[in-house]
Length: 239
Image 1 (cartoon, rainbow, N blue to C red):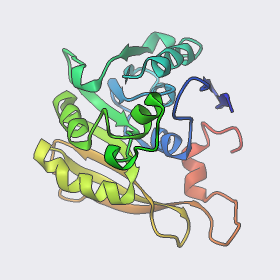
Image 2 (spheres, rainbow, N blue to C red; image 1 turned 30 degrees about the horizontal axis):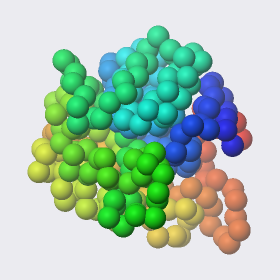
Image 3 (cartoon, rainbow, N blue to C red; image 1 turned 180 degrees about the vertical axis):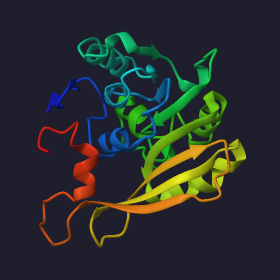
Image 4 (cartoon, rainbow, N blue to C red; image 1 turned 45 degrees about the vertical axis):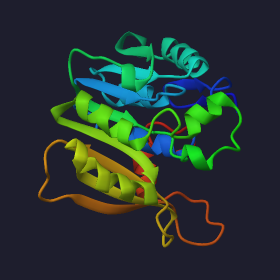
C-alpha cells in the first residue's frame, strides 16, 4: 500500500524502506508528548510519528530527524501536505551528528532493532539502515537521547520485548531511568512480544508497569481490545 490514510492526514510511503506498521502507530498513540513544548522524532522514516505527535499536541514544535535520503524526502512530502507543516521541521542527518541549542521535552523513536551482524541477508542499503542497528546502535540511541532530553523530559520508544529488557539494563549508564513499561502482546493471554518504554532523567520511585493486548482472546479473533481502540480512535479510519 503506497498511501496509508489516517483520520486527519495521510502518509505516502512507496520510497521508504520501512512501511507503516502496528509498532509505529502504537508508539505514536501512546508516547508521552501531549504537554511537551518541543518534540524530537529520531529516525522519522515516513514522518508518521512526527505527524501523530503534531495531531496530539496542537502547540508543540517538532523536529524530525532521518538519515536516509529517500525516506527524508518522502517524510518532507508528507509533512508538507499535512495540517501541521508550520510546526514540523525535517533534518536529514544522523542523530549522532544532530545538534540542537535547546533540549527537548519529549523524544520519540521507533528504532531499527535487527542486529546488523545477524541481518546480512538484507541487501538493500536503505532497508539495512531502516531495519538494522548498522547505523544506530542502542548505545548510540541512548547516548543521543540523554544528551538531547531536558531534565524533566520523557523518551518514549518501542522495542521487541527481549531487546527492551536489555535496554532497561543499559539505560542507567546514560542516566536514563524507566518511568513506564508496557508489555505488549498480540492478543489477550499471549506472551508479550513488544515493549513500550518511557525513560526520563529522574528516578521514579513508583514505575508504572502494565500490559496491553492488541486483540481479544481466541484463535482467529480479529476484534481489537477496548484499550487498543481507545488509544487509536483518533487516528485509524477503521475505528
